[in-house]
Image 1 (cartoon, rainbow over the protein chains, first blue to last red):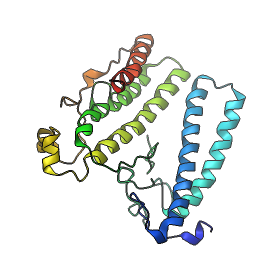
Image 2: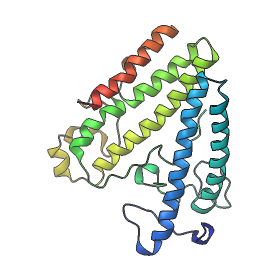
Image 3: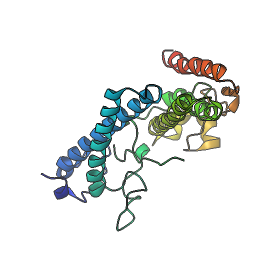
Image 4: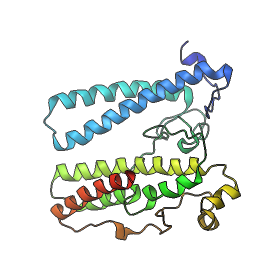
Length: 106
Length: 145
């Protein structure tokens, strides 16, 4: 099942998913966890590169992860709404997903 | 400047409220060795650093500390979310609740409000980095108690 097919599930993913939203919920969670992993790796690589800017291996990895997470984020935001206010939408979707402290984009 | 990412650096989903635990954890938010102190320490010290590398590392660590601050705030919020007045009283959080309600107020476990006196910015790179090293170990000591 593609991500696009599961658009507008309205899943809040509080603690347990509703049965009919389960597939989409798992899919969304898998995507956001991937994004989180990439972001974390990019962050740590950036800290390392701050003091080791000549390290080509780290730089290559940083570039690779940046490219991969950009693709993932574009895909995620298209379906589930913006992760930052820099993502353009036809309607204002910033209010749709609960906030992170309320388990939004969990 | 900063751009907000509407996600946590690490996911948090606490299923059982525990106001007693929240009363302790809040020190990692606004206590002497908390994340607010950490982020302000790095972000304030970066202005006076002598070279590109040290400015960059303090800038980027200080930024990441803000993400940690949000996670600790989330933990406190979820630990107290939906707690009854009785539970709040039993956890010793009645005085906190009186002044701050359901907000997450930056204070220590003992209820001391956050103060910039927790951080040192000496205008000297070596003194500042020494302070950072000491301050980075302090939370580990707190966590292992």
